[in-house]
Length: 525
Ligand SMILES: *[C@@H]1O[C@H](CO)[C@@H](O)[C@H](O)[C@H]1NC(C)=O
Ligand SMILES: *[C@@H]1O[C@H](CO)[C@@H](O)[C@H](O)[C@H]1NC(C)=O
Ligand SMILES: *[C@@H]1O[C@H](CO)[C@@H](O)[C@H](O)[C@H]1NC(C)=O
Ligand SMILES: *[C@@H]1O[C@H](CO)[C@@H](O)[C@H](O)[C@H]1NC(C)=O
Ligand SMILES: *[C@@H]1O[C@H](CO)[C@@H](O)[C@H](O)[C@H]1NC(C)=O
Image 1 (cartoon, rainbow, N blue to C red):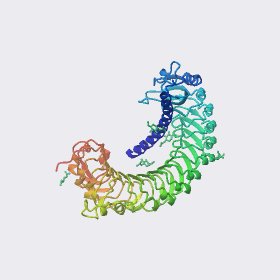
Image 2 (cartoon, rainbow, N blue to C red):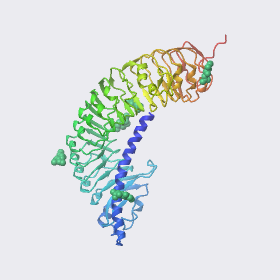
Image 3 (spheres, helix red, strand yellow):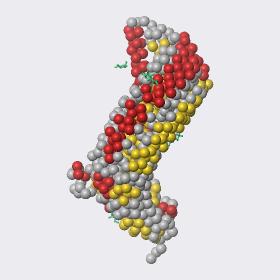
Image 4 (cartoon, rainbow, N blue to C red):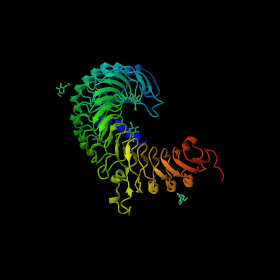
């Protein structure tokens, strides 16, 4: 959870950073012109009456404004005190209009419609109306007259209807974001003619249909986010020709078919998400050549076959999610030197086989780490690894001895066929916050050493074959918020302290003879 939130944050930063940087450039350009004007001691020309009229047309379309921005739009000098308006100081023409809700964004909004009069700002290079929440209605088709426009950001509003095909006439457009609106209908094929586009973000709308073939012309794209829509059809093979592509997010749509092999030639790609679609077939082994990849999300699709060995070798990959597919074959081994940046790996909900001991052994850095490990048969996990989910597979074997858990916070190996005992050395995974071993075949006792894992918040040992007591010194595990010991062969008194005596009785049910709160008191012998 924490990591997917982190991924989202990375994406959000990208989203914000790209437009801001380029918008600043536009403003910077005009400032340079303005400065020259002042040096010459020439007064700036007044704001163009045509532009002023166009802006007032926009203002008239806004019925309510809690941001206070439009209150500054008074008087004749639209180039002076009007917030969000930037003019070319030499000509007095409006070149940028940037309206963003001040934080907290949820509280400030503009309500109304986008007036077509905006199309009168014929020298406009940047139009940003972001996070206004209640700007609704259609995107005016007349926007196509803004032929100097390089940046069009209309994200975080309530715009509805189809994306007008006339936007295909914006021949100078480089950055387009219509994300987070209520747009529906199909992606306009006409947009394929805007061959200078570097960024398209139409995420979080209700767009449907296929990606138009005309988009094959958009070869300068560096950023393509179509996530969270209702798009369908194949992932177009021509995307593989977008050599600058750094981010491709097609997640949460209904794309089907296989991953086109051409996608694997995108050497600039850093973030690829295909999550939550209906994609299938084998994962192309050539994906291992996506050598810039930082994050790879293919979860919740219908991929089959095995995890390509070529994945091992992605030097920059820190996030990999292949959860909820039909993947079979062995767990990847030999990860140690091959995925040096790995922070999070989720292979859960597949049909993977393999030995848990061998898997950890292949991750272990013990061999390179003589200083911290006097016994190379003990596992030293890579320093960066925080999140490992192997749950709901067909993994066998027994947990190995750990020498050091480094940064591992989340370990889920539940619902497999893992046997053996819980090693006493599991306490070396001292930063674990979540440990789930449930629904396996683990035998033996619960080691008292686990009381040293003081960061544990979630502990699930249910549905195994554990015997003996719940160790008395579990009283030290005060951070635990959820624990289950259900369906084992445990006996004896439950630690009679918070939180263990407060969990629901179900957490202790179906054991041999556990007693004490929340179960009935132990019988005195
Ligand atoms: C991986 O994807 C699954 C299914 O979409 C999701 O539930 C899980 O939280 C993701 N894992 C990580 C570590 O983000
Ligand atoms: C923007 O301004 C900075 C300094 O203020 C300058 O170094 C840079 O070249 C300017 N960029 C453009 C595109 O004008
Ligand atoms: C693609 O671009 C070429 C040249 O840039 C242009 O001639 C052609 O009409 C474009 N195709 C489409 C479908 O826009
Ligand atoms: C998928 O997208 C829809 C909007 O099209 C959204 O309501 C839903 O929450 C998204 N689901 C996920 C898992 O992000
Ligand atoms: C837990 O109890 C055992 C003996 O009952 C003891 O050897 C061990 O040091 C204790 N560990 C902690 C962390 O208190």
